[in-house]
Structures are given as structure tokens and as C-alpha cells.
Length: 321
Image (cartoon, rainbow, N blue to C red; front, side, top):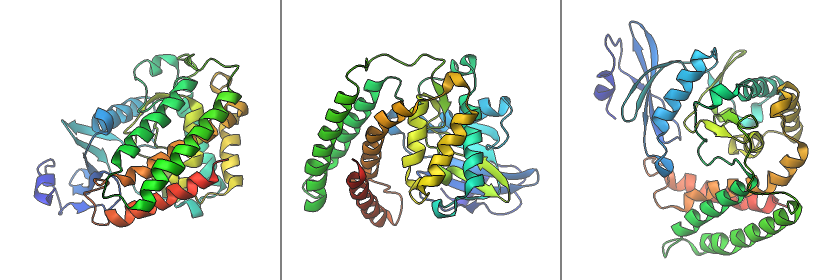
């Protein structure tokens, strides 16, 4: 989007908007005006008809009304895909730089969010790809694999084709068989009650935390909604942005979260262990979205990013026990 188009949204602009480079599927500009600094965010593409722009703006508006101040302040949303937010100082935290204080702050934020009551939860539907019963985890894996395998065509490199259609397929069957044995005494279709569900930003990790001195701000609520807290915790542990975070710090995160969360929302270690391989598989398949020839087509370095993601998928698959 040209700078002149961005300027149309702001009166009294004091200097040309500055485009903020990033590898996401949005366009971001910092805009300075006589009344303050703002972020112009234009959302591109919608995953499975999920309206990311209005979803994020509504989530942030709700949280701001409920006293959360370590998030972007929503200013205005322009249909269909432009959000205006107050500018936040800070930089994302690289996994290798995460320390114990960062972990404790993240656990505190997530526990506070997850402790919001049932009346608050009623305002939102399930998060994108929510798992509200054990069977949903299997469904997510099946749908994601069907999507990824559908990307494989005559132009797909042979190594990638065999990895997707043979190695990944075989591992999925092995993990599902083990899950079936470990969950044979459980009803896979019983949904969590509203009280057991939590409100979640979904894409939660230090890539979406801006740190400025000792201040933390949590961003990216595009897939906000209700979900299983176990999924949120395991997604954090296995997220790409957590790859360089050591095991001790990940354990500290779980410990701090479980100590802070109310008993009604507390997740058992047994449930986390049961679901962990399925979440690991999900992240393999998320990486394999890069098989799609249209993957991040708006980025100049899309080919390099795609190769990196496929290599990450291979590494992740090998780590699943």
C-alpha cells in the first residue's frame, strides 16, 4: 500500500508513514500525527474465512474495557481490513534471549486472561481451530494433513513429496494409534464446559511480545476466542518462536502458570502428556504450509522462508516419540 493511501486515514500527519518490515501476512505502518503515534495495520487473506482484522479489533476492545493495558490500544476499525492502534515501543524477544523474568511475565499475563469469567467467555465463539474435546485434536491433524498433502503436485521436489506423503503420513498413523491406546477409557466427544474453556489469543509466543526495558506488551489477537487451556500451553511450548527456549524455562512457564491460574481452569499434567504428540504433529503441519506454491507470496524472500520451514518440519517430525 502506498504511503499516500495510509495518510488518507490520518488528519494532521507530521511526517511520511514508516513501513514496519516483518514476515507476517499484514502490512504495518508507523504513523506520527499531532495527536500521537499510531499503528496502521492492513490485514491480507483470511484463513478458512476467519476475519482476522475485526476479530483482533473486537478482542482488543474487550480486553481494554476490562482493564488490560499491556496490549495495543484499539482506536478505530475500517471495514473490511484496516485497524488503527496506538503505537507501542518495544521489540520482540528472540527465543535465545528469553530469561526467567520474561517467562514469569508471560505466565502471569496468560493466567490473568484465562481467569476471565463465564460471562466474558460468552461474548466470544471458539478460537480459530479450537479444540473443545479430545476428538477435536485428531480432527485438526486430519484437516491440516489433507490441506498440506493437497499442495503436493508435479512441481513439488521429490524429497518434499516423499516426506509429506510417506514420512508424515506414517508418523500421523503411529501417533494416532498411541493416542487411541492411551485414551481408550475416555470419551473423545465430551466437550469442555464453558467454565473449563479459556479465552485465548491463540498465536501466543515471544514473537508477539514487545519488550521495552522492564515493560511488556502482548500483541496479535487475530485468532482470539475460546479454547482448551491445554492447547494454549502446549502451543506455547512448541511454537516456532519457542524453539531456542531451554527446557528449564519452558518448565518454569508451566509451573508459574499452574500456580497462578484458578483451580477451576487448572490443567492436569496427564492431559498435557496425552495431547503433547498431537500438538507436535500440528506444528509439523503448520510448517508444511510452506509446500503451498502461494506461501507468503507477497514476500520477496518467500522461497528462502519456505525452504527453512520445510527443514523445520523435518526436524520436528524426528523429535516426536
